[in-house]
Length: 143
Image 1 (cartoon, helix red, strand yellow):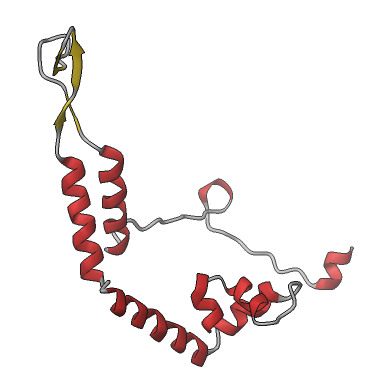
Image 2 (cartoon, helix red, strand yellow):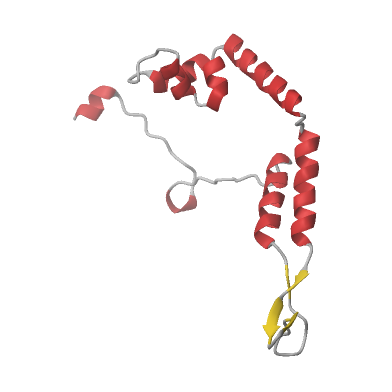
């Protein structure tokens, strides 16, 4: 468990714990599937978050602050001779900018936490009909 907590990589933790590199990609996840190990890892991660002062509320409030800061507009400044002035567009309006990428990423993370973005995949059969499954025996597959 201590090895897993270093980087949360089950395969590398298995290797560091002495498992063969050939089987570590199977052994690591298998060990994490053990109810006692899984509970111990979750408890340790919870303790680490508590020690760091990190909680769901902390993360969400900081993401909200990032959104609000990124959405604040600021003037686009340009040099005009010796002066620095606010840029204007072709119609004489002042040009402003904001950090849309930062705002979008923070909003995406908030939305994921709130499960607002659920991908749905619809599967259909031939010509939009129902999916059909043909069960074939092993002996038939050899033919």
